Image 1 (cartoon, rainbow, N blue to C red):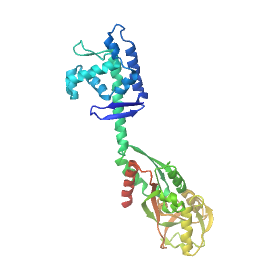
Image 2: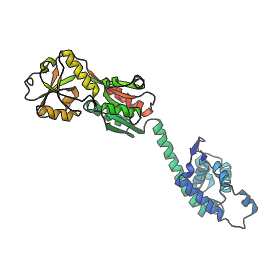
Image 3: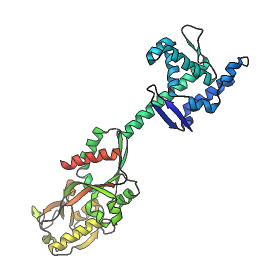
Image 4: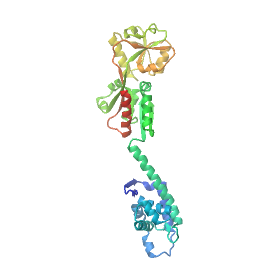
Length: 360
């Protein structure tokens, strides 16, 4: 059902299915009840004025409700007309037409000041709630349209959480406090899958994880570089190289490695193996572990050494030391990733904050 509704500014709104709203339902019940309670001795002119339900709802506008409420608040037509900026005669005719459409009087014009009828009290109470709720609905919708209200589902991993994420969240919340940011801690492959199904609006992970995507899927993704970070060596505190300020990859050639599994972190695993081969050896994998906390526990226990993105240095762990690599290696690039075909105002504003954080 579609009802044509206008505000006092004469801006028209088409609100679908608004009759299902509780207050509109109550208003209709009041109208039906008061109309059916009419005095059977009323003249034929009043009888013919009673509207068909469909005609009533197709013609009822917000301005009629506002006119009636203004007359009730000011207890008369003169002050109400002044408050509304209308001609008194025009306002009086509009109220008469409204009452004719409703089939019952809202006001007793024989009293001074103007009195509200019993039916009028019921009608105006519900009408006031309708206007209040609709103004609220318009305000909320406008804020959503402007990107001031809404929700973003964001995929994150340890790298972004240990680096730029706190800065991004704080800056965005200060600018857009009514936007809900829902964070999902997911591995890169899970983020990519949920970006494709639109369960996520945006994700953060290393760019090399995009290399595993089909060309068609890759082309549907947009990226924004957030930061670059090198790999660092993760060593047991009692390791023979722990006293050095920096180490070279070739120094780790004889060590056992703890690396992420191909099945879960293929991009990072491939990158680690590539730089080791570039240094002249293939890492001897003693244990695979996907979670950084597990890797650190295994290193602490002396199971082996590892290579991890530099953000891991933010995690202080007893029994573990981090050492920069002397090798000339390419940095790992953390990117924000989203579907090109599905932009939104809120997402655009979030990306602007991400870009500002990336530039610092």
